[in-house]
Structure formats: C-alpha cells, structure tokens
Image (cartoon, rainbow, N blue to C red; front, side):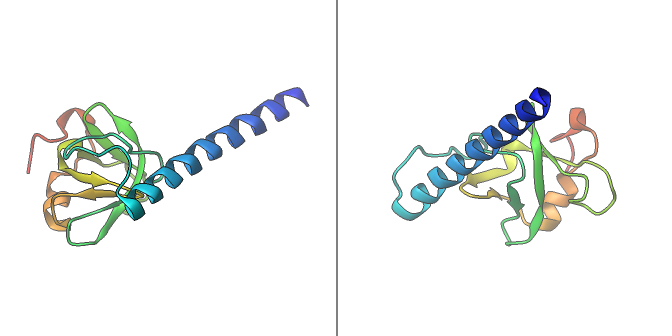
Length: 121
C-alpha cells in the first residue's frame, strides 16, 4: 500500500511540474514576459511536447532530450522506432518545440541513431 501511494505521489509531482511549465510558457506567449529561448537551445523542452516543422507540420512528440538531440516518441514517424533531431534545429520553444526547418528537411536530418544525429542532411 505504501509503495502504491509513493508511485501516485511521484506521478502527481510530475504532472504538477509539467503544468507549471505549460503555465509559464502560456504567460510568456501571451505577455512576452519571461525568460527567452535562444535559437538552437534545448531550454524548456519537456517530455510529450509536440514538435512542429517551420511549415507547421507536426513532426512528433518529445520523448526526452539526449545530449544535443531531441529523441521523439516511437510513434512519431510511424515506423515504431525512436527518431532523433538535432537541437540546433530548434527555432524556439513555447508550449511546443518549433523547428527552423520544414518537414522535408527535418525528415532528412532525422536519424534512428542518436550518435549520428546532426551529421547528415
């Protein structure tokens, strides 16, 4: 019983942290007040954020940031594999991750190997 309560508390803590981040992003988006996000920066990227190409196409959802790469969830590209995009491709982050490449360019740069991410294109 104690183990179950502990897991529930951890889950609640994660959800609260995600919602606080979303609220801060919303305030920044609506008011322009808050910390800036430098281009090519992974600052503010959180799990399950949607990633959009510069053309507006949804590229997938963030699994997590791994080094200089954004690891997308397995269902993002429809092939059941994780794909990686270089953080240098990030234009800005608000409630979503916005890339500085269109969907075709981003797909060319994506890889299933984190160590090769950003080395092709």
